[in-house]
Length: 294
Image (cartoon, rainbow, N blue to C red; front, side):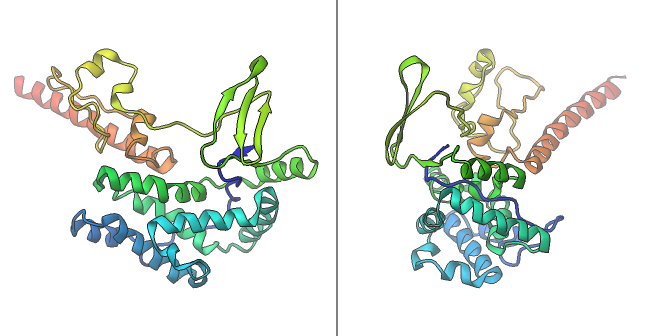
């Protein structure tokens, strides 16, 4: 297995569902920050995250250098700690902790805050400038992705069994890594320890964001106004020459551009609800026109 940092997501842990409310990083608190305007909005919401971590797990941020209380420093400290703990050996140790969390029905406090936090941060993502959104993607998105991509315990047990049998290794690719086609269909991978050759490669990095102009409907794209703009709610496409009709875009690559958490079940439920509302509004409009005409 190759990984940018040589780490894997941690195992599932216990948390109450329905969720228990957070104390500081709440929707109301974030809405209040949004109301203050866009200037330093991301920093102000991040300060709420730090306050939430201090409240729920006072030792967590205190165990890092002071730079962890900045957006740029938090990600570095978070992943450096994960790297120091060590690859698949850390996975083996962390699985014991995750199983204990389920047995005792006790959340792992900082992981619970980060799990809940991504949904709260999602409230501000369409409010950010392009530069601030890029800053979020670079420094905070990897942390949230690492946390909510928790792995089922059975899958981790299988990974550990292969590791113990000497049949699996986890290799960091580091910055500037590259993948290239080799001889006879092989894949050449640059890692921290040099180049390695793989006979088969399964790419599990997921989809990348795509622009509206990348949609596979050329005639529709040709009629879009502002097709380079990122999709913001309610995901309705501005189509010229479309009288009273509506087109709602739920294509995942396009949503990922400004809705990076849209692949989750909760988000899919909310987004599909918006699409249904648009359909029902159109149905009501047509029925009212028919009634008026009769």
